[in-house]
Amino acid sequence: MSTEEATARVISWRDDVNSVRALRLALTTTAAVAIAYTINWPLSFITTIFVWGFLNTPNPRQSLRDGLGNIIYIFLGTGLGLVLALSLLNMPAVLLLVLLLLMLTTFYANNSGAPPFLIIWVLVGITLIPIMGMQSQALAIMIATNITLGGVVAVSLVWLAYGLLPNPPGVDEKLKAAAAPPLPPPDERLRAAILSTMVSYPVVVLFFMFNISGAVVIMIFIAILSQQTNLAVGKKMGSAIILGNIFGGITAILFYELLVMVPQFEFLLLLMLAGSLLFAIANYSERPTAPLYGMAFSTLLLLIGTGTMPFGGEVDSKFVLRIVQISIAVLYIVGAFKLLERLSRSPQRSHGAVEK
Image (cartoon, rainbow, N blue to C red; front, side, top):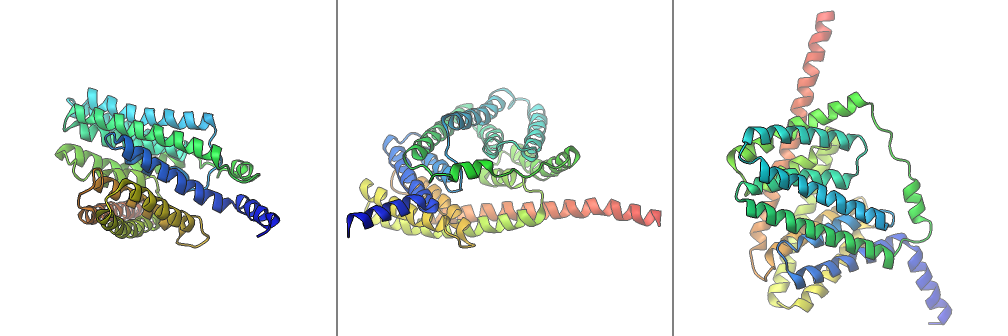
């Protein structure tokens, strides 16, 4: 191969935005695995999930200001949850009232153009940390501290990744110039926030009343999925999440069996590099099923993380439990929104009949 041909291939690769994104995603995820498993602080594997979540969607280059802003969002979400866990757990009625107001405000902010990253961290913080605090305040502090650490490390890795593997020229400008969808009127935003709160808040109350910490994934997924007040969108999203988790769980079992046969750190990194590269390429392909690969590898990272720190565990049983929990959350969301939709139509029909 001539020097000119080699140079042309390099230039062609650097100009293909999806190739750059896939390589950046795979290398950064593998680096996160290496750091998390080497330092091995509690819940360190969550760092890899955060990195994958940051990079598996098309985004402009994260500036230092963007990174610092995301870190502030992390501290805000976990800080809110920790304040609730340390100050209001002995006053359950007050805690539930504060949670109601916080959830309504958060959902309204979501419909008013607030950063999605902030919304997710606040929802996770105010639901996960207080419910863990019911077990013990030390557990709440440990979880808040370590998911914050994982988030900060992930944001830092993402910032470095964009610096080392930036998007091709012009891509960042196009993404930043993309017009944001117009905001609905305030009354529609408030109505959507009330609907989201009516769907998710009863589940939060149920979990707190009966101290259901073992199935906290259900509560968190319901809170996150409740942002979609459009029933069709929510149902479609829920189905995609279930399919993605099934695919990811099956792949995680395969990964786990390979790690059992070769329980070496170097093999883990090579396996993660190969797997993340394959999933990243599929995630950034033009196929209609492309988003499923991002969800699937996120599930794989979670299951492998909980099953291999240290090596061992039962990934297959965790996979089944996770699918069951997510399915319950999706079925609840679809059913609750459909019920609210019917109830909201009934008064309108009655009013129309009276007028006739």
